Image (cartoon, rainbow, N blue to C red; front, side):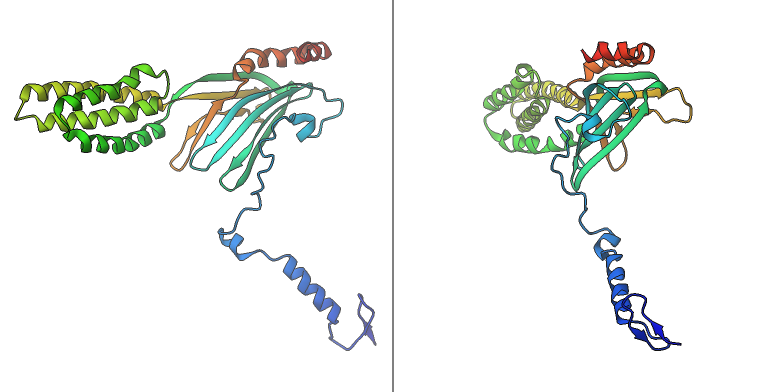
Length: 302
């Protein structure tokens, strides 16, 4: 019995495969293939287009997320910024309240491209909100600042061979920024590290020739060291924000965002420009919408 190709209709011998089917099989195989570089993890990310990655000037609903039936956006805030210096990550966090949902969205970029996370809850499920806007001690910042301080310390040690009186004057002058600048704590620490190097070398050099002058230099060095530790400690204090949105349903995972540190990465959550406003308004807004309905929406939209 004659056989025909079900694609092109050409007569086929027993067991023969039509050329058109062989061509299609090759095309499918090629289209379904995985690049070797991506398979072993050395290829570039397909997510490296970062144009518009921060989604600035856009409302989560309706610009980024499709609205629900009869959903009314009430208010949106720039709540926080997330940063990881090791991963080159910077994300801007926005929280939006509608009459139907609470939406939280982090959007930004990393070393390899776009980075985004999105969480939402039905507003009726929200049982409470906890927000903390304070400070934390950044051990990573302290250690990095301490290691970098060896550079000005070495420079100060090198130039510590200048005349003792001049060395002490330069050392005291380098301590002046600590009392003049209101912030710039890292610059203060670097200046004090250089002062410590100058005073220490000069004092040791004069230990046997002029012991009184040497002790005076050591006294100045101790003061510079105390000021250096204080400046470095202040540099390591970083603003930190944490937010927790709790739900009535025990099976639902609440939103919980906070600064955290692991062995391979440090994730910092910094307060955004509207953080203090969110603390003042968010809980009341959610409660009004839950209890007053349209009147609550009207109150907070005005």
